[in-house]
Image (cartoon, rainbow, N blue to C red; front, side, top):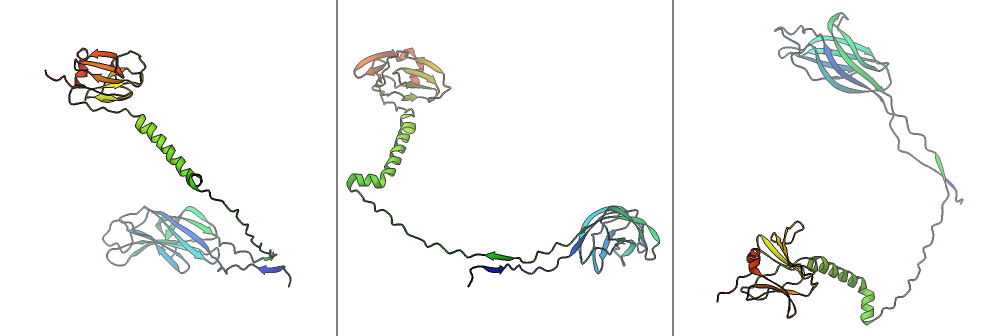
Length: 305
């Protein structure tokens, strides 16, 4: 048996398509009253469109002798040509509807916005016109006939399995690091980030003691009231600002300005009313609390003697 074969490509059967006419009834004007309008007044016009045995109609317009419609109808036809018949009727609430006029148009060519005069059944002009547009869409082209396709079968490759190299697992700490080293790295990295940006980088508000004594503050810590806050900066200086907590726009009111550069220093409120900066047991700076009334809202009062 030969490897080369002519395989016909079959397509589903498609029914022969038809062309179509698109009829748009745009407007009517100068209509006369229908004969059935015995009470007088204006027309209530509507338009009937016929191609062959198919007829469609627009909605009616109340009390109009000139009005716009804009209705669009599509008619399928076997071939191009023929005629379209247009009838304008007067809708009567009592009695039969009355023909205001009719006309016909050759469908050989498309028409855009053409006014057609209306006549009666005997082709006598009765006054009134109808404006319409006609567009013809030809049938779709049939699909091409199936074309034989020459194919050559290709043998499927035989899958081969490559043996995986054996991995020797280490025991103890080295084996744990081989297995979970990535997890240890991620946890360590997150710990550094949390400490740097959430713990070390955030000023700590110090609670005040119930009486005079130690008000211990490390560099970056602060104590605050509703209107002021006192902070120990990284140079070991005390600074008094407006506002209840550190902020970029806070106004500086006072600073010890000793530039002692003592990051490990702490503050201490003595019983004599002195606010001190200590490095261990050594007092490196002190200032009377009474000299700065703003500190009164921040620090505890001295006990009564």
